[in-house]
Image (cartoon, rainbow, N blue to C red):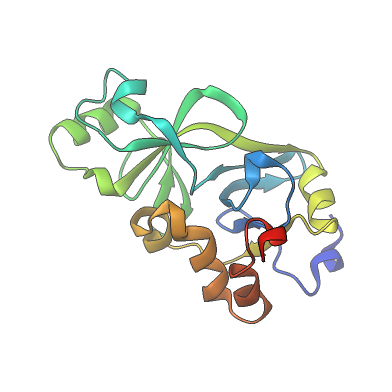
Length: 191
């Protein structure tokens, strides 16, 4: 990747957010916030943070009891897989995406921590599927202004912000022209 390509933009890297432009036509990504978990020469992947599924986590995974919050739709790729982000340090095989934000790790340990209430439901998010891009695909989409890259990812945004308001809130935090985008109507013909 050419270093100067993103000279006036924030570069897409692990731990950064991809925010869909208000006019992005793909319904899989309409008004989405994606946490990038990896971005390298082989491709990119992450999870949509603000798209709840119709199924509760307990409905999707029998091993997870009394988790009546919806699983999130992590993206259109392999929606028959379950992934998780959490803010619990010390889980074997977990990958730290940002300070205090981890992806994956030993599932048996996660189950034990949930069952013994050492890991609160508010400290973990489950995702069905993921969002993925092949080598060069994300950069091409960025060149076409499909995404805004932000370095505003935080524990508060990921774990404590309601999904319905996340897109708008993130753009407002970014300020400037992005604050204007946050007020863009879903259907501009109704404006």
